[in-house]
Image (cartoon, rainbow, N blue to C red; front, top):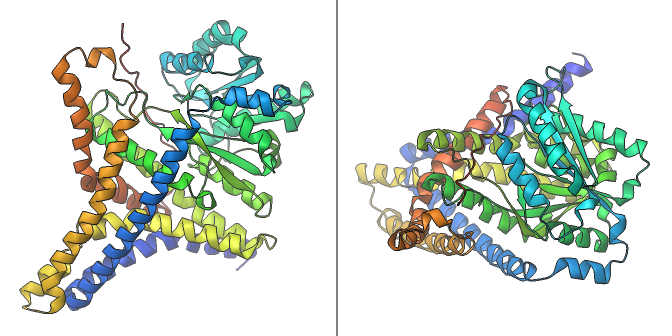
Length: 507
């Protein structure tokens, strides 16, 4: 067997491992429940206890991030930047906005909000990256953008990613890969200093906090090593949250609070969705990968490996806001929500990439390799298994023990133990529900025209969290199992573009 075949099969084994662990866990849990239900009860109780302890740990970090966020948004970062960083005006921001057939109104809203930030927009190089397969739709929008917004920014660059390029996976990563190389031509032709360029990559519906760029520039200029760091903001799905249905709101807010807990633990952070970094680092790694689905988090691993472990993700406690997947039709939105979560869960493709390159790079410290390998493995495993084991399989060994008339201290006390553990877990859910209401944007005028309707909607925003067990399974475990099983079987996913719909605008 030649070297290429050996490498192929070795990499395939790594792709199989995450899905294999998940399915092995389910099979063992079911078999143990039937063959040794008492041991199955012990296993479920131990698993529930570990999960509640983890929830408590995450709750603590959620509160820490929440307090930091509340402090951060009260600071005048533009003033602080000007007072403490005299060279800030020497830096330019390159802002990548990849698009794939979204309505002109979505793009207009994003760019309009970008012109209103508390920063000198003449320091912005905006890159609108279109797809060749949508040329007829994209070209009039590009012409409109140039005409309407060119005077606001230092430069607007329009790129068009050609269709059917060999080696490309159609999607955001390949679009950004092409756009990055096109922008490099402009940067080099105009002799920009790479070290004075800061890159932000946003989804096309991303609305930045007014102080985002002031805060980002301040962090960049005060960071001890900004060329070996990415900057990860909070992600709120608020653009259309009031119009969204209960399921898309709960899933979107769950994502927001998951990221909040991660932001207080920088050693675990990967880049996610919208984020920022140095142009120098982006050029050093050869831009985004053009043959994967989850390029937003892969970009961090590319940097970590390229710089031999000397790369970090720094938390930004100021948010960007995006759309939920709600498109005006409940069942279509539910279907879109599942697809979005499956695409995010396909981040499991980082596991084989990480382990493969960690093995081949001897310069990365062992502690760094072990930390990221464990975090990634445990993360995707828990994502797929925990809700199913806790909610569905938790009572299986107990019921079987009862049918087999196995009366022990464990079988008698197990229901009370599980109920008490679930009550402890419920405390975290209640906290998240309250925070979810507090961070809501102002209710649109057309929704609060009636006094009772207004307060009913706020109450609904609290009560919606009672569906969290349901959403954790259908929009947590199931898409994660789906994604990991596809990778395990070699049924590789393509990129699915999230459908966008405008919210209703008050007149």
